[in-house]
Amino acid sequence: MKATSTLFFLIFWSSLFAQQGFHFLNLPNSSRAAALGGSAVSSNDNDIAMGYHNPAILGDSTLGDIYIMYHPYLAGINRMSTIAQFSAGKIGPLTAGILFTDYGTFDETDELGTVIGRFKAQDYVLHIGKSHSLGPFTLGINLKMAGSYISTTGANALLFDLGGIYRSPYQNFSVGMIIKNLGFLISDYTTDAHTSLPFDVLIGTTFKPEHMPFRFTVTASDLVRSSDDLYVSNPNENIRQLDQIFRYFNFGTALLIGKRVELNLGYNHRQRVAFSVDEMAYGAGLSFGFLLKIKDYEFQFSNAKVHAAATSQYLSIKTNTSALKQIF
Image (cartoon, rainbow, N blue to C red; front, side, top):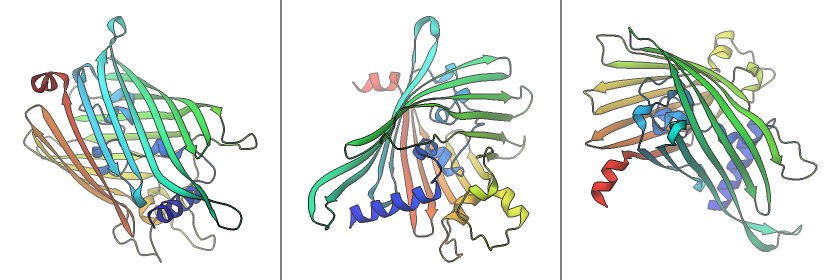
């Protein structure tokens, strides 16, 4: 049953993104990003995990940080990620990580349906990032090696992201932009396949009113695609212009309770519409989570309603090498 559910999810997901491959590259790699609607490119606090979404977010203050995430996705799919920042001598701080997705084990059958073996499906991303600040502006780059395998068939790609962020020196306000997944295929699944990469452009802003305990994030994604391509729609349906515009955006809010507790809430309109059932969303597109800091450790949890019938949780912990040395 688990394998059947996973296979159904893969077929359903790929039907929404039939024009591109490697769509796993755009899934959240941060519990906070997941809680803020699925993507955030303008964070103002040098979060090492947010650097996967925009390398310009990285900074020297995260040197020595280590981030570990476990994400039990839908239908028995599991995603795991580890990110660390280290000094590379004259090059300066670099951030490196690995993201691994395991779709489980499936029955291999012949044309008559007889089971003749078992096979697995897995994805991976190896990434390394670097940022450089010029006054209030920071530029960053992520270099990524990605692979996707089903049984003995696989595809590999070399990609990079170019990001920038402006942080106001006078207000708690930032604007970020990233060009994602520029690159090329090293190898494809088959000689006849023509897999395309999920090229994307995202722009976002994060701001905190001076006398309020709230921080707001707005992110626009898929800016290189038309609104008709953002999810499968009924061609006879009359979609309002405002609804078409909202397909590009996700919204997030953080309630800051002191310096050690953060409560997050997010909304992704495209996810709500795309994964509704019989035009009923049942909470699809909504997400929430929290961040708790205890001494040198930061615990994060997020819950995202990615489908009308399913939720997805993110569990992560962030610490630094100094804290680990005290243990070992």
